[in-house]
Image 1 (cartoon, one colour):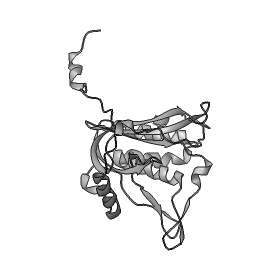
Image 2: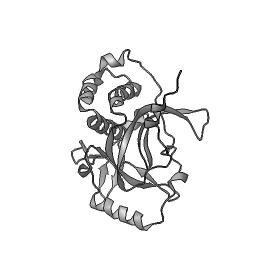
Image 3: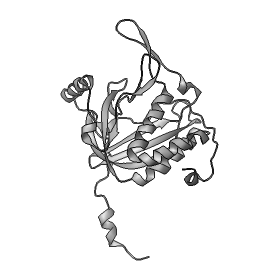
Image 4: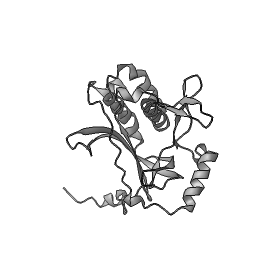
Length: 235
């Protein structure tokens, strides 16, 4: 096979090895979705499946790593506000579905409509992931804007994270509370509360993003697989 020097036009000089900074709106390229599997920390014999969604630019990368949901993922957490009143938050499953819906709608609106129409045939989260990968693959390499906030761990280290994009109203109905991705910069923005946190972070000592552990915390997963043949035909 001959040497193709034209490949130079497609070769990146610097790898996006650092994670993108929190509390910023970044212009990035969508690098795709995939299903990954990791070993457990507490139990090395345990394996956990993840949906990994990656974005990159010249400054670095961001990955949203989502554990496969199980029955417990459908439970809504309860919180108590300053006045002592309890309220419900969106379940982990509702947050995952909202993430997939927003990603699919922005990256491939028509493809996501077809995915919604086919969703009654999905028998596992594997099917959801396969459909999402199918409809978003044509958008690989295209540019978008993503909003990242900061999330602190137990040691106080701040990592980039997506904003909370879904909430529950007084009637118990789920609603979209924020946008994390858009084709237009002006669609994304920080709330007054987030802007305050953003200014606090700017005054604080910068976090070394290269040293932050981005391995997701362990959780329960459902590894039951029910394959649908010919996913391209389904969508």
